[in-house]
Image (cartoon, rainbow, N blue to C red; front, top):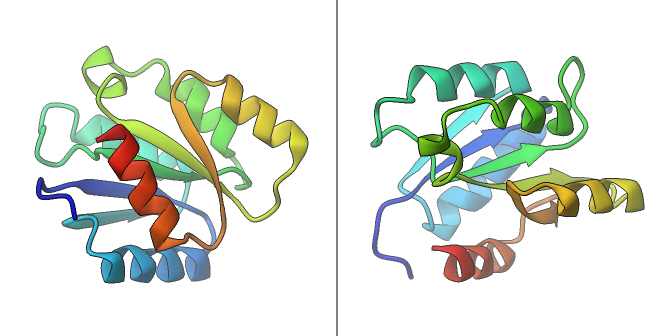
Length: 134
């Protein structure tokens, strides 16, 4: 069990997936705080709003790939423009219900993405991710 408090930001347009993954994270007790956003735009707005508040900044972003308006990869493009103080400390794992080979390659090519996880989240996978990167 990790002893330092962690904040996770879940970005997913699917309300059911948000609820399921929030519950999985809550039950896993791996994070102290779960913030949910229903779009890439909402996620970016949250990050911009909390840029100067280290306590509110997430340690990990769980980012859905397939979303309308702004998909996960478009979010990453905008994320790259954010200050390094954020992008160097906040890690991103992408979530996908389909493991499309193109998405896997694209996610692996991004400097900001540490892993591509399949939905629904598995507590064991999340725990392994935290042990490796935190």
